[in-house]
Amino acid sequence: MTTSPSTTTNADGIPANPLAQEGGQSLEEIEAIRRLKARYFRYLDTKDWEQFGEIFAQDVFADTTSSGGQRVTGRDQVVAFIRKSVSARATVHHGHMPEIELTSPTTATGVWAMEDRVCVLPGVRLQGYGHYLETYDKSDGHWRIKTMTLTRLWQDFATSFFTFHVGPRTQRMIQRAGERLSERNSSSAEDGIA
Image (tube, rainbow, N blue to C red; front, side, top):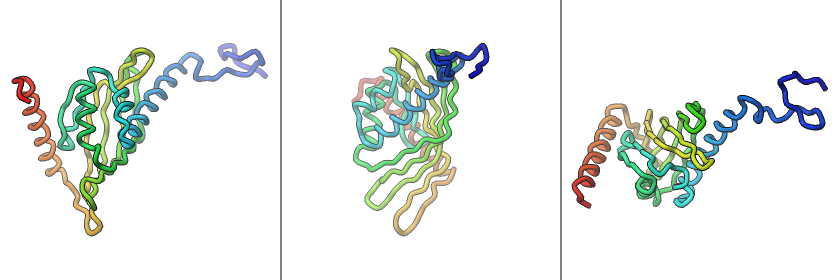
């Protein structure tokens, strides 16, 4: 078997794993980030909050105002906010077509197309589409989500009898309400109001 001089082979002359060769390290790192996000979706939907927390950096920042949520900083606070938002609801989240870029050996950015279904009330479900815009940090040999912004492109509320599309105008109203709530909660925290 003939190999090019730059190809690494094992003792039997078989080319080594291309991911272990120069440039392959970045593919391994990108795959590690893909697996990180897969665990995010799985732990979120199975409500495994202990494991879910390990997905995030200690100083993570999350912005879900486009869905009427809040801006939250800190691992424990982000997990508590998401847990409160979905723990009593059946959810299904899917991430697709990741665009991951390594910006250094220990940092990266990512954009994920997403789809989710959330049972908001008995017989009423939300089906949404959008993107997660994220940054990642690697410490102690593990990638973690450093920042996460959820954006929404389309939302439908559906029952057995009808589907109601949330258009751009309503979506902007929901986002503004989420931003105001986040600002109010931030001001209350600064003032020491619980």
